[in-house]
Structure formats: structure tokens, C-alpha cells
Image (cartoon, rainbow, N blue to C red; front, side):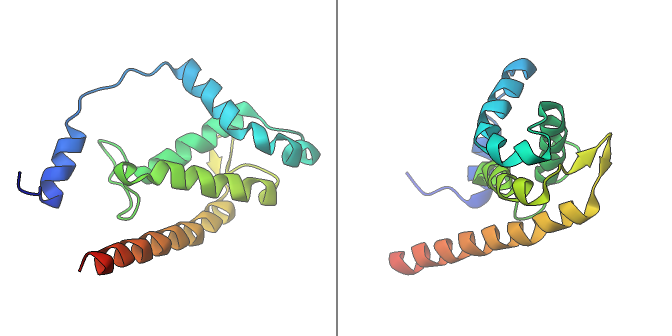
Length: 136
């Protein structure tokens, strides 16, 4: 079977249909994902699930959707959501607060996210270059 082009691979991955998701289950999983940060956030009033959900929604906007394009290096098919959550989990205890408050985005904190995204992109490019150089 001939190897698929990048466009063909993307089309194949994107045409897998819809998935049903119960929001309450997503909230539960989000809370579980951040439980390990609870001790670090205690001095700042503890973890607030509602604010975590708000920040999660904001991070998802960076990945894009059917109406908003994603940032070029943040494709959900390439693990961008996992990368963003890892970055957020590293930064949240340093900030001591969340990215959003009552629908307003803290632009300084959001600005801290972008250099971290750049580091992840750089690491991914280096890994890809190493893979390509091993194949040749």
C-alpha cells in the first residue's frame, strides 16, 4: 500500500465521525487530572474546579475548532491538548492563580504560556529531525 500524503493522513484522521461526551464526566476527569496540584495550590486557597474548567476552555480555544483555526503548531491530532495541559500544570502553581477570572483573561499569565509552547514546538521539531535523519 502506498504511503499517504500529509493531506490524506489528516483527512483520514479527521473523518472518524463524532464522539459523544458527557460534560459531567469531563469535569470529573479534569478534576482528577489536577489532583496532584492540590497541595501546591493550598496556600492560594486550593483548587477551584470552576476556574479550572474556565481555563481549560480557554486553552482549547488555542487548539481551534470548526470555526476558529488552530495556531499552526497546535494541532489536536499531534497531541496539542496534552502539551497545553502539561504547560498549564507547570505554570499554575507558579502563578498561584488561574488564567481567567469571571470571563476575563489575565493576559500576563497567558503570555507566560506562549514561550512554553515555543519550547514544546522546538523539542518536537528536534525529535522529528532526528527521526528523519535516522531514516536517511
